[in-house]
Image (cartoon, rainbow, N blue to C red; front, side, top):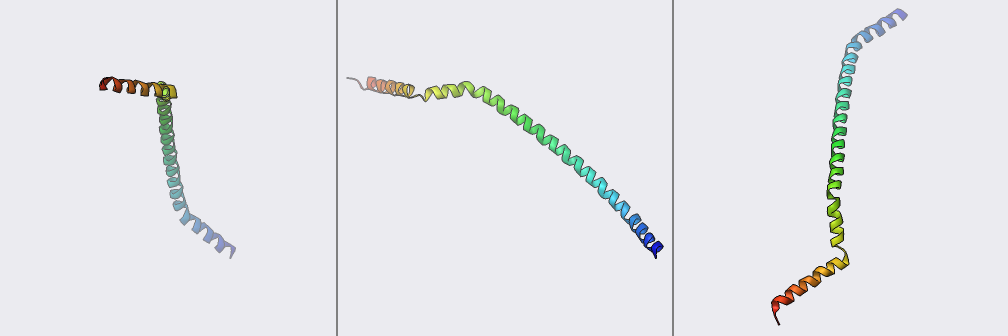
Length: 92
C-alpha cells in the first residue's frame, strides 16, 4: 500500500513537473517584462521632472513681471495713462 502511494506521488510529480517548469519560465519572463516596463516608466518620470524644472526656471522672470504688473499702483498707472490718452483725442 505504501509502495502504491509512493508510485502515485512519483507519477503525479512526473506529470506536473513539466507544467510547473513552463509556468515558472512564463512567470520569470513576465517579471522581467514588468521590471523593464517599470524602468521605462521611471525614466519617463525623470524626464518629465527635468522638463518641469526647466520650465519653472524659464518662467521665473515672467512670473516676476506678471506679479509686478498686477500691483495696484501699476494697474492704476495704466488706467491713468489710458484716461489721459483718451482725453487727448477728444479735444478741448
